[in-house]
Image (cartoon, rainbow, N blue to C red; front, side, top):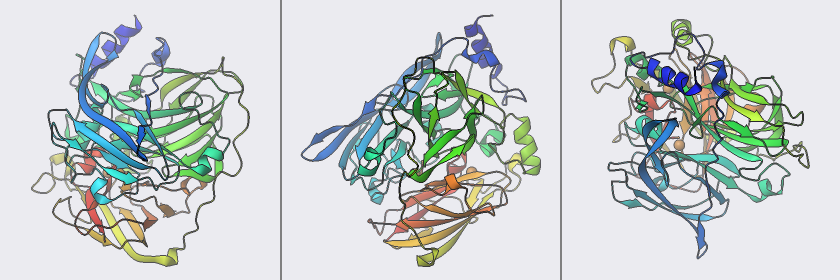
Length: 496
Ligand code: C2O
Ligand code: CU
Ligand code: CU
């Protein structure tokens, strides 16, 4: 049977079948047909009068994820996803976001510290045929951030169809370090997004209550918009900036030969020191940067291993396991045969982080995450919301927290539900003080904007709200499983 037929059969078999079953995501010969690795175009804007200007257009398009089958998509300056934007700390950026979708959208700058009205959350709706013009100073340290739709109740749907892109920030510190940093050569961005397809090639989004509850899990993982691509390495030391842009799937990333790699950065940029590891767990919204040594010249497969979702969750765990949510599967192939040697190794010191003292926190807050009773039976409140923070579902007219500018706070995020939630907070890069009853692991000690809170467990994070205040326009905090966020697990805070 030809590869193409197999994929068609695979796509067709998802018709009417909500879940994968116990087998892995796709057959082992997924790499038989070589699909080229896609590097999203780099877009550094144009500098005019000291401002860095980006022109973005939200538009509809069409992709051919499977040969001969068309998929209707949406993208930014292209059919699916957007360019990788790049700017430097200290830049003042102006972005023109034109909406040509035919319906409302928003564009949120995930991970940025910025004024609330520039955030691109649910309050900054961009109507069809209008242009939204956010502008702000880049104050974040060097890091790998991203941007995506954040329309209330529609984030899952719009991101699924393609409204997302990556954003790289540089600074003096990062530019001086001898790390792989040539975009598309030895500095490779990767966005992981799992999807389901109907037999005609169209995307299949939510179609059952369990998919709402667990969040959408797809049978195919797109790597920068391509299923199981082959990446031909150019350099023996290659840096991958990996974004989990999936709606709900967690990954336990590692290599097929269990080789160690170096974790150099998390959501908010460089760690103080590289951390050597064989695996790293990545939840929706999170990023990690790793450097892989390909000196042996051997081909290797980037995979997701078991253990990505929490193992100890009773009924729900059994259910998710049975549905293949915690499967082991291949993501992309790396060919190292023609890679050229690179100059230096990863430096042993990457950065020095400011030391925050928990005693300096002005306020402490509890955020209790829960899921509605009788979920499977369609329970929830009268709006159909089934996911809550402090027993409340998101309300655009309610402010949940008022914080003070230029202060620290400690938030205790308590998960009273049977599944893991990646909790994300806008406008800040925080530090994890404690997580799931333990001290954060070395790689969890970097700056973060999203933290995994496992079932019946909690995380303490220390937040800093700098520079900006607004008495009316809020920022969001929410679970980054987009089906949860869209159905209530989100709240609003002001910084005044
Ligand atoms: Cu990436 Cu409020 O989200
Ligand atoms: Cu965000
Ligand atoms: Cu959640």
